[in-house]
Length: 279
Length: 319
Image 1 (cartoon, rainbow over the protein chains, first blue to last red):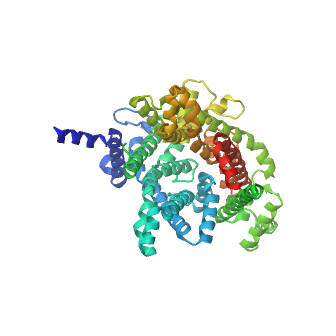
Image 2 (cartoon, rainbow over the protein chains, first blue to last red):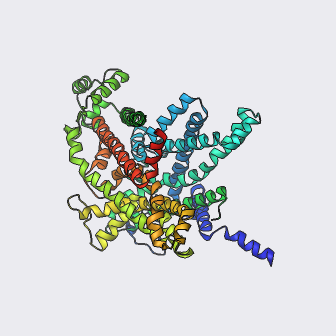
Image 3 (cartoon, each protein chain N blue to C red):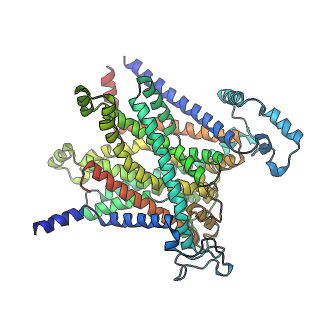
């Protein structure tokens, strides 16, 4: 009886939303790696006679102005969206760690200098930065990820910076220094793990936010060019037909919403785990 | 003593503001110069316009494009230091004139969105916090879901429902106040969800503080405690984020104004960037930076009003 009730409590720590979120993310991963396993039709195959079909059993998400199946295109667009999201987060994450560590651990002048640079860049609207950079880097998934990655770097840098500073002046670091540990081992054993742990959460949630930005820039025509199945581009194309064919825009956007929601739920769960608070 | 420290704070703030303006000008210069294509040809309408070599050479000389990049950059900064934003070649107008024409719709949209966002956040948090497990978690899920909505998608969905299905609001334009509601909602709902998450968290923490318990013991009702004691604490993190939020909103107007075919800076910026109009892009980016600097000044004053400890501690430290 006691064992059973303990098990029940353990399961309660994993709420149902977490399962749904993880399930959806796994589904997205499969669609990104092997889209043909989920949808076998060709995302580019046009069928003018079947244009603007509203959602039904054959086309659960309907068809677009050229008769292409929206569900197929959304599934095939996952790879591009996830790649841009993960790529941009990887870029801003590494950039932020370099900036934050150099500023937080370096000498006084470097600390002040990097602190000022981060403050200046952080306050700049990231979407405008991304817009400027993506216009100069060119269109396509790679440049888009790079532009958004650069634009989001100050935010991550600010976070690592303040984390490193607070860990550096914490009691346990002082204690380790008093015990005579070398600077390298202090950084390796105390500063890095404690400063970077909160970033795992931020990065998880960051993928979702990045996908929103990428879709926004694609929407402005800075992403993949039109026939490509990409969520932002699909919405941008569908906007012209919104009065009569809402499904062109609704479903790609719904996938973005669900992706952001899933990464947020997963991120918040990880956060509570790390902070040791009950969810 | 007090005076000296107050002036030091002033100096560091002015320094940060100048740094921001300088960084925005430099980043814009680099980004626009990095864009593909020959600047002189682009000024003349691009390769499609097929300009004569003589015209290209004339423009190159007129804009100083034959000089080294660093010299061009020097002239660029020098002109900006004299307050000369230059003329936009794509709009055939002075940049200051374009800004004057386009700023009001965008500023109105961004501030109304911030207002809506705060209203939504406060309603969501104060109606659902500590009202039993079901209602609280419903409120929290509402915040998270709202924050997950991409503004441009929300804009299109609102357009479809409110304008084309229910015919409640005009679908496009920037003439009436009614046409402001939908774009403002599209920007406000995700931001409101975000502010609500932040406020909810700090309100939960504030409600666990001993002074809340003592206020309850003195016989205040939960509503009174929320209003008189917890509210100030809960608002602070959200207020601190508001200047940043206004900057982000100004950036997001780029997409929203395109969807609702509204006049404004965001749409003009997208246009300027795609036309590689250096002067206009710089003008708008600098304008947004100035707006952010002013907003953060106002926000700091509000922050001190809501949290008197800030002003007191500063005075105590300095005396």
